Length: 376
Image 1: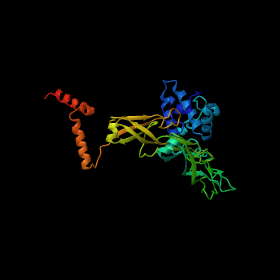
Image 2: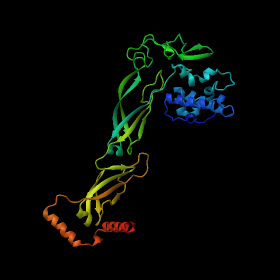
Image 3: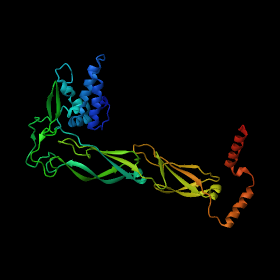
Image 4: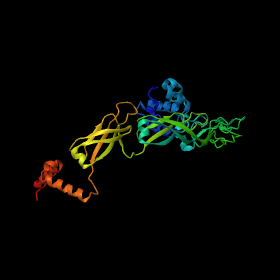
């Protein structure tokens, strides 16, 4: 049998849940059914390959072993089992998992272990916390294994018994004319076992809901959309199955001064007209304190100053980003009569010499050319 990755065979991600896994298997089984592909000798092999992959990944314990050790952690021959059509396999057994839901149940009982559901938590961080890292305590509601009954669902001192109706399979077979239809056992509801004396704390469910506190270590450099996986911190599994995982998704709140662009930090720096014209020196903020920024004479709005190494160190390693300061020349407001007069004198002293306003000169030349080129 093929040694391709089982997740690749079914076309699913490694964190696929049980429902989506079954859908993917159903789709592959329908596509490569040998009866529908009699002219394609490879169809049966692909069907067997999908069957093998599903048998491993739908079993919580086998899936855990496969995730950890790969093909070496499972027995492919056991998974292939009666997958061939020439080995005397029962047709309804092969297709029970695929088509059983149409008739009210699958081909295998639900008494086997089930992996718990994965959980998601949205964590809000300040820009400083995201850049430098932090440890955050969170509280999450989740289903955990009942401590009173150790997850069995039965009262302490008692245990679940095999269902007499289905013999522990969780399914009953009903004959309808020429068809034999499997349905979920109405007595044990597909569990394969019956709890006559349920646990008083979990009421026979084996799991109870509680809020648990976790410490999440956030590494430096995380950004919006990054996530941290906490293995085994999701919901408890059923019937002794492994717990799911908790995925903590990062959301960085807007900052009043800085904006993040990859590993760089951006900020606007307003300066006065005199500083822009004559030059000067001013303090600008960084996430680690203030630094001096030298403003050369004749600086225009939109001028960018790059300060090396004052950005963000990426979470996966690499060079630290930069701080990019964008200058905005601020027009003075609320001028006194004397100040207005001084500005008028300055404007008159420059006259019509456009060398003092190079951008204005360039713009006016562009406007003149635009109208000259127009044809009326």
